[in-house]
Amino acid sequence: RVVDYATRFSGVTPEDLDPATSRHHLLRPLTARLKLKHLLDAGCLVVGHSLASDFRVLNLPLPDRLADTVELFSRPGERKIALRFLAKHLLGDDIQADVHDSVQDAVAALRLYKTYLNLKDAGTLRDTIDDLYDHGRSVDWTC
Image (cartoon, rainbow, N blue to C red; front, top):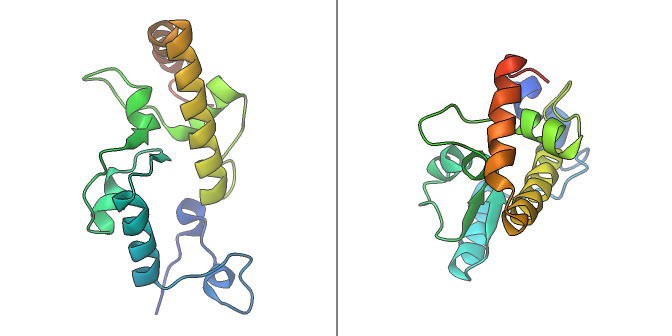
């Protein structure tokens, strides 16, 4: 029995977990874990933001083929940049304004990964990351 869905942070509401009212295709946790493990075993690339804790909760090791935007847009020894900040300043998207939406987060992470690849190909990734950190400090990391 769930006593607090922490909807503001999780994005999960009671309706989301009820097969009669959910707008999502629901899976049992074990089924979801097995499907994910199958994808990992097949060598699929996993794209997301700050995924280490997600894999820890699933009791799965971090995959070899991982594109974690919290790492891709970071500098060693410095703070990690929030998905919301990256989405706002690299994509022009306002996400997570009211309630957390995991689908919206996943789409933003994928778009950020594509942006990362484009910046890397153009040779401007390091400068972009430097600009992100400079701007972040100037606005105290707020969007």
